[in-house]
Length: 260
Image 1 (cartoon, one colour):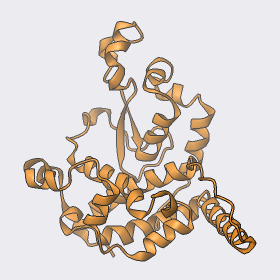
Image 2: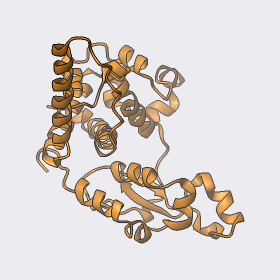
Image 3: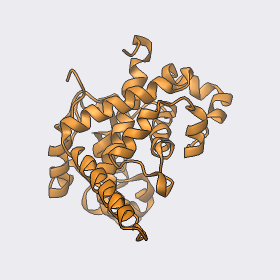
């Protein structure tokens, strides 16, 4: 049971974890080739282990299974975080240089190992079982959690979002209205100067944003480059003309946490 004073940060942490996990599930990393073993029994063991891991990983394509998995990993990991991270707010981070130095971003796997040395071994075992972590490739639980904690602390450190007058109550792509929203610059800031210079957009269009859940926001940036987003997908309607985005939205919209 998460205490009331930690619930806000837990919800944010779970959201960051689910986004990273969805990235792994929807676009799995290529598996390293296994070298042939000299003994047949060892070859069979390797094949069985790989097959079992792939079968478990495929289970996470089911949104109910994925939701339960996210809840479990998030709760176990959050419990092991330093106490200050469980209740920290933006103004705490912004005004405390020692805190900023202690959690210098981006975090690495080594940083995570130092920050949460008492992480329940079952978390690592579960990530390995589902093929999310792979110690053989130097991708253990700390390496998986590094971008999660980086996103979590970055969200806390970020200044207040865009004006509330533009804000929606639900993700403009998948429609979920019970998770934190982030704002996506429809014309990415990295290409603002080019967009105006090339005549793609007027300067007063550059601050147009869409409110997206973290998972959809991440998927949009995987779907197209900054330049392509600015040239061809600069409105929500244009994004939703893409079948790949529509299919992802349908899938992720079924993802629920317990009690939802």
